[in-house]
Amino acid sequence: MHTKQTSGKLTLAAVQDAFAAHIRDPENHPAPPDVPAPRMALYRALFFANIEGGLGDAFPVLAEVLGAGHWERLIQRFFADHACRTPVFSEVPEEFLDYLEREHTLRPDEPPYLAELAHYEWTELAMAMAPEPEPSAGVDREGDLLEGAPVLSPVPQCRTYAWPVHRITAGSADYEPETTHLLVYRAPDETVGLLELNPVSARLLALIGNEPGQSGRVLLGQIANELHHPQPETVIEGGHALLDELRERGVLLGTTPTTGGES
View (cartoon, one colour):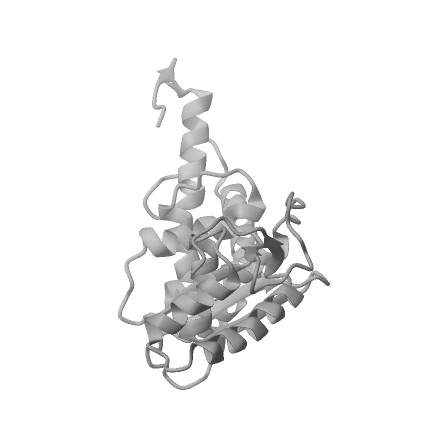
């Protein structure tokens, strides 16, 4: 913070620093001199209302679960403690998520799924705002998903949570930890969709992302081996139906030629 003075007065930079610090945390930072208290209070209220309103729109379930008073106190702590790295207002929700995941210490009166619920809500928001992916060269949108190599769209997000975040609502009974695999995607009609995956379908998506160039048949055969399934063709048939569904939903772009490793 700049604190130099000129002829007994704070420099412009020092006044700006003091103004910003007081706006963010008035209890620990005095207002700059010569700014009338009513005007300073108005500035504080306007700044905080903008942040709270934007975050309330981005995290409506979390705000409802916490309740108005608790939600406001959480936003105040974020406003005071977190140094945002972006000047873009639409990116503040991601900064809030970063604060919850990296800086915020969970309090006894806060739900243990607080950060995970925020991440789930942010993912839905990010999916709605994500730009349309560029057409991928060499992708056959109608290709055979078993014999060709399935290609994931870069837009969908697959995440494993320790809590059933997609079922959490305000006023419901206490939730128990439950490993939950969720796929959030944007459908061809631009709506945001959600699929709850079982461990096998989540594994298939992970393999498609981690082993590009492998055919759908090889990937499904690998899963059958991992499961020690007595009838691998059953896994392959079920997986084929899932691959077709994922392409219809826009999660898969299509196929590319395989790059070897077939077995």
